[in-house]
Image (cartoon, rainbow, N blue to C red; front, top):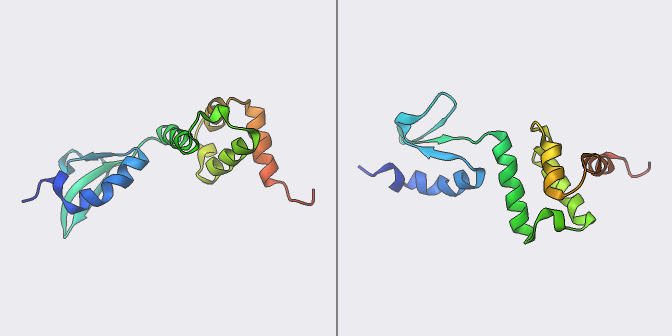
Amino acid sequence: MTEPGDHPLVTAVKPLVDAMGAELLEPGLAGQDDVLLAWEGEDVIAVRLPQLSDSLDRILAALERRHGMPLAELDRKAKQAVVRTLEARGAFSVRHGVETVAGALGVSRFTIYNYLNRENTPKGD
């Protein structure tokens, strides 16, 4: 039998699991909140999803890599674009999300709320 780490299902999902900050486990180690992945009726691997707060840190790190610099060094327009991206990904539904993002962008919470309000204001106002 193929070892779980060598299984085609594991190979296929590993990039997604890594991008999410999740963890792969042997099926026998899966907890109640873990996701079991099966292949042809047999459990092959389990995925332990990250905590939402850890996901936000990963998203911020990915955005820094994409921009090639610390987010705090971006200009205002780029910071506003980052806030739009983060809002679309649910970053502000995470407890302390606004504070975390403000710290990463080097701005105040008030500035983050202004960026969010600016996006949600109808153009005619």
